[in-house]
Each structure stands twice: as structure tokens, then as C-alpha cells.
Length: 428
Image 1 (cartoon, helix red, strand yellow):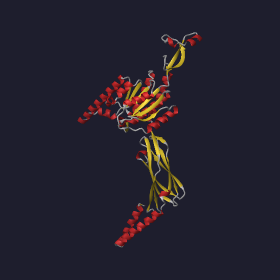
Image 2: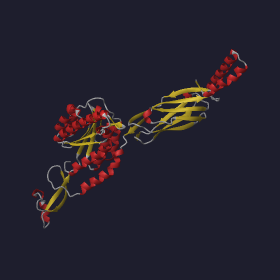
Image 3: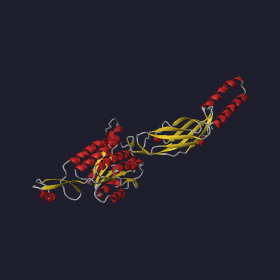
């Protein structure tokens, strides 16, 4: 049984009665009267255990987009239900207005809608539905909780898609340039044109030349069906909060933008989330199925408090790639990378490697501090860390890797620009 404020008010109303007849018996009699009235009122309330509850939620929603949890209550208690219904969710689901006043006659149904605005990626789980049924007088009632499981999958926001139109325009410019005049494996025939001095004589098309009065050559363009493998590092360095979100979230945004751009370029994209083992992977998806599959796979990826096994990561990459491809490593460029084996992994990969890392803006702010002695020491430490990071970048480039080191909001467009630069240079 639950007691409401009306019962407490009824007890308070007994004070004047006790003042008129100041005896212990008067006070006890009044309390007994209130208790009996509350018991009767609770007994007359609808049985909340006999309320049938169903919950319906969307299968998935993108982060920052609203969703709705819909409860359907059917009253089979035989009495009129008057009370409060609480649709409970874990806090990160953002169910702020989840208490509903309900008046439901016997045998009827009602729908209650709870707005959701999740604050984190992943699976947001529903808790119990609690029904508090009050009696006709509102003095007391009965309460019961129903287990109605539900799951809302919150996909990555993909805020970086705002950069996609401009990068697609640049990609079309690359495709519209004069075809690359090379011959050999790994190229696609583009068109025929008149021979000019300096052309490779091996590119002359003798059959077409015989049909014309001039010498013509074949022109070629880079293959579109290239392989791009994105390895997302989910080890402990990805858990570092950069701004309001973990470093991993910025890497996910970069992976989504690069995948969208590369798929428009005709490349085959795969993704592996890895630390000491594979946490998630997307392989074999193409066309319109690729981006939904990628968002679904990345929704539940969380940082793991462990070191990255770069030997194992190299094995996973070599297992997936039999020909030269673009390997994108979304990881942290830290001095500890030398000890963890990142440099050796890059050296062992017989592919075009692109390493992308998130910079911490707080470190840049510390480097500018000169207000007092403590700020100067902090600035010196930040400057030392930056020099060590720069040394790691130099060593990565010495091993043939391209490096992108950018702030969280700049990582995705900078990585897309690096991909386009490799395309323009004919390295893909």
C-alpha cells in the first residue's frame, strides 16, 4: 500500500479535534480512523498487477535525434484505474518526462508516449514500468512494477556528413580530369586520342591506327575498385575524453565520412574495430547497405582498458588484404606508440598506410600558458609532449605512412582530404 499527501492532510485535520478533546484516546481514535479509511481506499483501487502493459520503441535512432517510447495500457482489473505511470529508462536514454497521469476505465486501453533524447551511443535499455493506482478518495493506493524489456539502439551521429558534398565535388573534379596516361596492371581503359610526342609507344592502339589516318593511343585511368580497410583502435587511448566525448567518437565520425566518400568513389571499404581482439567488423557490404551496416556495427563499440596488440592487428589486416590497398589506422599518435608496436606494424604492412589521430585541444591551450609558475611548468610539459608526438610523426613518415593529426572537429574532413590527395597523386 502507498499513502498519498491527502492521508497526511487528513491526519493534520485531526489537530483541531484533539485540541477540543485533549485526550490520548481522541488522538488514537483519529489515527485509527485515518488508517482504516486509507486501507479501504487502497482496497477499492484498481489492481495494478492486472494492467496489461506493452512497450514499443524504434529499432534505432541517430544520436541527438529524438525518439519516442510508446506504452499501451489495457485495464483488465475490473475497476477504474486512476493514478500515475512511470516509464523508466536508464539515464543516458534521456527520458525526462516519463511520468504520466492516467484515468482508464475498465476494459479500455490508452497510449502513453515518453520522449527520448539519448546522450550516448549504444544500446539504451528500458527499465520497469511502475503503475501506482489510487483509490476513489485519493488517500492511498497500490503499486506494482511490470518487466517490459525494450532496447533502443543509438547510432553514431555522423555530424561530419556536412563535409561530404564539398568532398564529393572534389572527387568529381578528379574523375573529370584528363585520364592518366599509364599502361599496365591496375589501370582501366578510358578512351582513344591522337598520339603526341612524349607518349609511351606501348600505348599505341595499332588496330585503331589502321582504321584512321593518324596514330592514336589508348589512355588509362586509375581503377575505381580499390580496397580500403579502416582499422579503428579501441584500446585505452581511445577512452581519453577530448572535449565532451571520448577520442573514439571523433575517430568514428572520421571513419563514417571516409567510408561515404570512398564508396562514392567506387572503392570497396571494410572496417575492423580492434584492440587485442576484433570487437566489430564490417565486410562484404556495398552500395546502399554499407553505411547502415557501418553505423550499426559502430553503435555499440566502446573503449577497452587494454593495450593495442599491433602484431594481432597486422595479422588481421594481412588476412583481409591480398593485394595492395589503402589501410587507415585510426589510433593515437603518442610516444607510447613506439613501445606498443605501431611503428613496427606500419613497417610490416605492404600497403599504402594512412595514420589518423585526434589532438587534444587542452594540450594546445596548456602550451600557451604563462600566467604563473604553475602555468609555465604545465606549458613546458605540454611542449615536451608535443615534441615527442612530432618525433613519432616523423618516424611514421619515414616508414612510408601518411599522417593526419587534427582536432576532433577537424579530423574527419582532414582525413577525407588526405584520401583525395592520395587519389590525385595516383597512389590509390
